Length: 382
Image 1 (tube, rainbow, N blue to C red):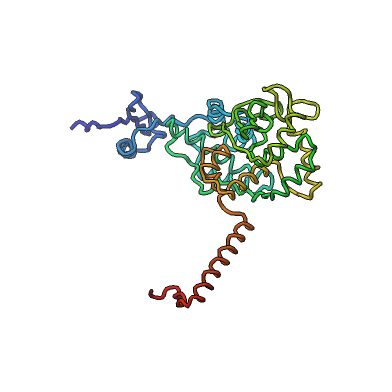
Image 2: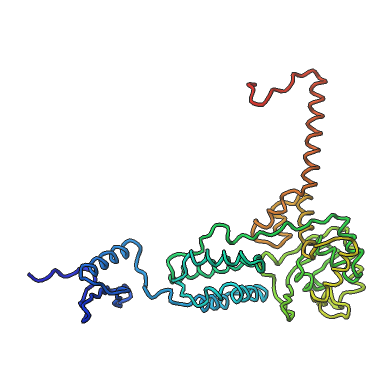
């Protein structure tokens, strides 16, 4: 009796005596098993399991995922519309943190255990710990695209919380401290301190602000461009659509801004609002000493310029800004960042708690004076 012909795939005996299994892929190509088998029965079983796998999960090109992570990630960055700062950040994360471990690994060979081992080794080092969540998020994004490209079946970046940054709580200045800093800094930068706070502007937005985007009659500042200081100064658009925004300003700082425009800003509607001492475009490196001297002068340690934006966002939340209003002021399309400012500061929380207690005590006192029954105990029937 002739041997029964296989319905899926075929097996042939090699000159070595071992058996090779092959099967036809939907791509029209015959694909061999990744290894040979000692017996025909073993090869037959492998083909049976492969057919069941294809029926269950769909066919997967066995050659997919041969790309090296370093090459694929470089193409991933190159293919995206990024701000100069974001592009530089991604390239640095790849060069310093990811490629030394994964750069020469094939995409399909990267396992969750490899990523856990990499993260644990990085976390044991004191230097660069703050960059680990950023690097992990970048790797997860790259491999998510690899999944969409059908190069790998699933993303091995599955570590809970690995992409969350453990940032220390930044200080929130009082209004008095903000104005002390404004008084202490070089007069050329007084308005910058106030606008960073009460306009919730980032450094690059301040450095890229032009006269035509500051309307003091309407009390608005409009963000349409930013400056990226990455060795050379590069002009660019805000990194997201939400970053292009118009922010309303309090009348409190209008006089200072008007004086600044008349005294220090570059001329013409296209002139930069903030420039260096010699009239050149503002650079962070040239500003740093003025900032440090002002902080020392008023006794504020560890305060960064970005903390002024953080402070201004907190002021806005405490003034009653809604979540959407905070997102608009901050230039964020995601609610996550704005939610941070909807929690009260400790002193504000204590103030609210004290007022609540005083009001409750007053109502209780009036109730007792009017002869009402004592309020029922918690859990007692009413």
